[in-house]
Length: 564
Image: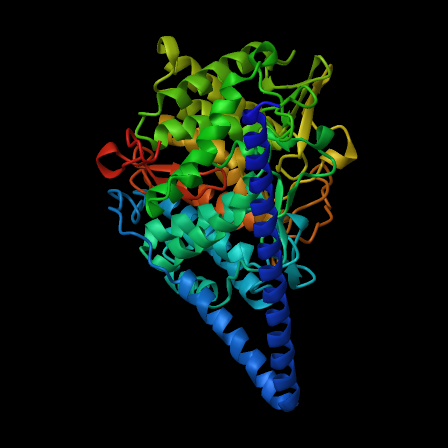
């Protein structure tokens, strides 16, 4: 036998003996530790049993108080100081004409009526039922009373000079707004209404509480991004962080207008906190979308967050798609026109939309249809009426010197949407309207004849007024304001109506939070001077919350490797 083999065999045998010996020692050590821990636990249990029920309760309460105090300490952790952008046009805007001043005062009175009744009958609830005179909520806000109307209305109150009402809202937020609740909310809606509203209130007033609350909420939304692709879920539980998508969305998909409408708020969050996580989340979404094939250059409305594949090929500039395109343009504007990538994505998307979705009816009305199941559906939603303002806002800086073309296109969309109002009994527009044969800019189905205090048409009037000063836009805006006052005002606030073609409409008994955030704000701005929130200093999020342009001299987001 080879002596080498004998030596090797002896060596292996010794190693194995040593290894097994160590394993036995480790096993014995663990057994002893478990025994000691068990005995210690038994001793502690015996000690507990010697105590009275009151003493045990007192100990539990002490531990609870300790945890609560630790959470409060964490919540009050100061955010890093950052230079506030140069804020121009927070106040003022007084119109020269006495007639316009009276109209602006009327809009302010309508805001006061909406707010005062919410204050009396729905305070702390998300929304108001003005006829039943009680609070109201929907599933987008979850099961908790989060005061959506308060947060959504703050900046409108501030801009209108309703400062006592603003301070009431601020106090409620300081004392009651809590995001540590077992409630499943819409990531999109909570971002645009709550984070957008809180950030805007912070910039306008300088009150730190709004910034702190915005960041607390944003931290609660981050778990929604924990998907295989980084495309967030539509909903997230604020307590558990568990996310899911709407049951009705195509094949478990996330929705373009929802995951594509986070950029403005998340960039500001990174700016204010110095934490790049928010910026990185939205830039990851952008990079993923850039890599994907787009049928006819169009973005479908559904994307599966697990597979990274498109769902149903349905493209719309109305619901499900709308604010994605808006935020591409506004990302460029908010960056002081330095985010060229966002501008290119916007220009590419608008070219495809103009080629495939924008058509003229037989009666000469320009409308934006929807691409569905391989063909164009000749129907336009009230939500798509915002696009008139978007085209006007994006005209300057468009390719091939087409600024005039896009301003004209915006005006044509505004005209079509005004016709949808003008062709009803109430002079208020339906939820959607068709362009089939003899029917133009009119709702056909009963389920599409309602008006829920939506702002998009008035929003477009305001943008076009700012860019053209054509008096028709103030005239049209005043028509809408009078119709809202006549048919939607009730003693307990304002309510939507179920049929705009009926001269005796039934109310839906909901005062939407966006009525105070958007509809009344755009009307007030329409009858104000251009020096109130000038568009070269402010960019409005899709809930009409103004956020300041981040000029290069004031931000580290551009060209900072730590953030990018």
